[in-house]
Amino acid sequence: MGHGQAAENRGMAIFPQTRTAPPPSAAVRRPAALRHFGPNWYATVMGTAIVASAGVALPVHVPGLRVACALVWVLSAVLLAAVLAARAGHWAAHRDQARAHLLDPAVAPFYGCLSMALLAVGGSGMVVGRDVIGHQAALTLDVVLFTAGTLTGLAAAVAVPYLMIVRHRPEPGTASPVWLLPVVAPMVSAALGPLLVPELPEGQWREALLLACYAMFGMSLLATLVILPLVFARLVHRGPLPLVLTPTLFLVLGPLGQSTTAVNALADVAPGAIRAPYASALGAFAVLYGVPVMGFALLWLALSAGLVVRAVRGGMTFAMTWWGFTFPVGTCVTGAAGLARHTGLAAFGWLAAALYVLLVAAWAVAAARTLRGLLGGALLAPPQGAAPVTTGAV
Image (cartoon, rainbow, N blue to C red; front, side):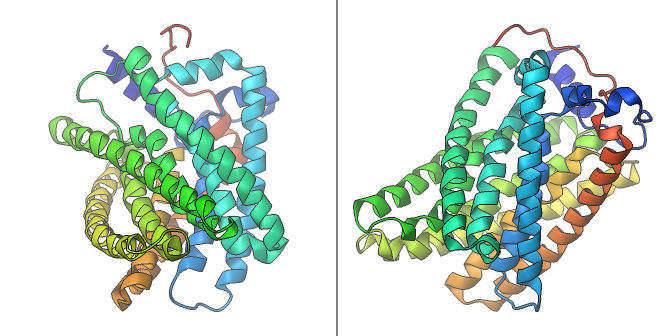
């Protein structure tokens, strides 16, 4: 078996399906269960936080929505603390497995989710969490999480591709949408950095952060443009993904929706951070870039939805990959809301609302099934059929 096919099989193994998972046992419930608590669990934090931030970004008023979003943000913050603690326990007690994850091309890209989880909770805190803890506390929290998330995201954007080149060596035609996870993390920083621009002193500090966000926008976008053709080529030449991995197709929406969100958020704060004529040019760029990219995002959403329906008919059951239906769709909500602000077009507002309904439905299903699998022990059970990773030390 080649390295690429082996990686795909291991990728299927790390997302146990509830239908085939073994019954819970005392061994599963013991702390040893953290041995199989991988970095993909950060997706639960990302998917929950985006429900809160996307809800308050909607250009339509829904009574009680802001209060509900504040409660969801609290849940995301609690989830972040819990997952961080569990991952720390994983590294402390099962360092061999943690190192094996880094050497596994099916798992290593999920290390980009750590950055996005930190950034999502911090950014959501600035827009809705402040209703709960106050502006100053939300600002302090966001500064800490934005700094940590950005640094870890930049590290993952370099380290994971490095490992792919020198250790993983995937075969041609085995590209996965999961490869986008580490390189999209800087785009999340670019989209949430504008929340901190007005908090900085006028002049050099504001302009430096603004342009740093554009630099991260560029590095993530260009990396996405390198990877996305490989993903599409894999689909065309080798057919649909395995059933359990089909939801990862939605991950492609992440850099599309997040980049649209970024250019619109940056355009909002540009007038107070950079001199003319650049401020107005950046406002025009937000529309000229965002509208075509949102169009492609809708095309990919339709294509992915069709393949998901096909997979469901083929017997796809729940796995942790279902969290791929949440955060990427949420970025499209905030992207469409940003375009509604800058174009004044009501159609973008209704698009954002429709996508938000899809997001909430996906989050509710994924959260309920995850809780069920977690309480039953299935999601913490050892993956079945996982091949050992023997590539060597990092």
